[in-house]
Image (tube, rainbow, N blue to C red; front, side, top):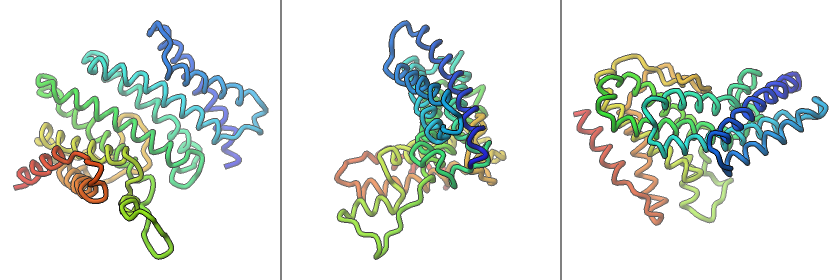
Length: 294
């Protein structure tokens, strides 16, 4: 860790300078101040000051956290623009790849310095979850737009499958960063429903959304890419992004989707029954999976 520290500081400073230049371009193109870009720029200015101090006094974890927060804000601005424009067909593929790369940099930096995210505290679980969530949610929104373009689907269903596999992988990665809380006599909870959620690995509303999103992406995969299902598409992040797990077996859309949506419905109609989470779409997809299997 100590040996990797100076390397992390130098690399984060370089990445911060590139991100700041990118934010400047975005601000000029927007022609007006944006809250997220202002906040991202302020974080990078603070990062620059810290990196300018004596290197041995700089905490790599603090620097990487500042950079990560800036990237999350910067890319959020760009994602909103893509969604507002319904992912323009002529430029979205390049822009989505660029955003995935930005959101992957913090995790890649950790891995480059031989510090596996699961076994170090350079980036905390919450930031790692957020980075995976944002990449998976971006690909979910992009694929949602693509599934409405009939002519595009006829020509590029193989590309859709690639985006779906990558997106599902990011969402599953997000769901697996933290281990479920094991309920036993040594752990006490005042709220039994909360205990059930934690034991199921559900730590926030975002975890539930990730389950529904990944299930829906599995549905799109089976519906639009069924003729390619036998091809060997491994569960890996092929959009130039980082992944902390690589699955050697091909991704089975029906198996993965059915498993996660059954859990989603069980949680929503169990511990979260009073919260009135909608399970209609999940049940319709599960019915589709069942008929497809038969």
